[in-house]
Structures are given as structure tokens and as C-alpha cells.
Image (cartoon, rainbow, N blue to C red; front, side):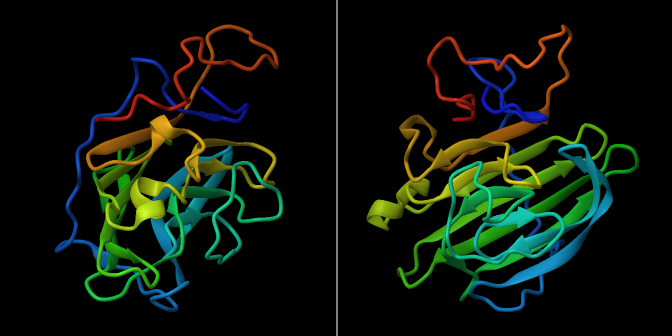
Length: 231
């Protein structure tokens, strides 16, 4: 499980998402960043999306592999989650020093009809800064009504040594004050959660059926939080 916030990650053997890449390379709208390196842009979500109990209609997209709601916080660094004082109210897909040069593009597209729409934000062939032509392809999917978040990885770095498979990246979510969040991985601190092609991770709002007070849940199997991703 992990974290005491609204969102949770499936643990153990149940509830994990199925990897299913959504190709929007030809149909999606290109994100117009302020720069190909350390750039950002604000795009419409296309529906009301609840994140840590706050309704959002726009989302900020960054070349460095993360998204956030509200104020712009542009950084090339990655952070452990939660951390007050860094970027907040954010979703880290693979937060690292990335850029959209050469064939690198970020696009977005809304699918479906109310109340079951979903927004796809897809990073395709993104490179790590100043590290050759190895590329990363990943996407985030935000779902209307359920407010689920799925992050998928089509391709990860495999020729960058210490940065391969997200070894120096952050994946997770954090609230608006930096006081709560769910960290899937930060700089290889959970080796079982390193990224790989064909992996999908789901963050969802867990509604308890029993009064659990303030007791935190832990994974009794010892499996790292969120390790139900595929494959």
C-alpha cells in the first residue's frame, strides 16, 4: 500500500493494471512547451478530475517527466516523495533531466464520453539530457469519475548505465502541501520497482469499507508497495 493520502497503489497479487499502450502519435495534439529542455505547458484535462479531493480542470506538463496541478514548478531535479518545498500536487511518471529533442514529442488526447472520459498524455522518444540517442516512451492516463491514474512504460532507458530503467528517476504522486504522497520508486530505493518495457502502474482512490481510523496499512508479504505492475 503506502502513504496515508487519498490515493493508493495495488499491492500483492490483486488489483494491478494490464499494460495496454494507447498510440496517439498521429491523432494527439502536440504539447507546445516553452522549451525542448526544461520546458513546460498547461493543457486542459477535458473534464473535472479530482486529485487529493480537489477538483482540477487543467494540468501542467513538463519535459522532465512529471505533471502537476496549480502553480508551475519547473525543475530538472527529482525528489523523494513526499518532500515539502519541491514540486507539489504532482504526478511523477519518470521524473529526471529529460528533453524533447530530435524525434521526442509529447502529445495528449481525450477519449470517450461523459462520465467515462479519459485523458492520455504520451511522451514518445524522450531522451535524457546529453546522453546519446537512447530514448524513453511513457504515458499517463487520467480517468473521469473514478479519478484513477495509470502510468505505462513502452520503452525505458537501457544504455545509460546508472540511469537505466529509472534508476535515477522518481515515480509516484504527491499532494498540494508536500506532506503526503505515494512513492513507487526513487533513485533505485526499491529495486523490485525499477521500470521496464510493458509495465503499467495504477494509482487509485481507495474507499475503505470499515472504519480504520488513522491506522496505516502495510503490505504483510514484504513486497514493495505497488509491485503488481505488469510485467
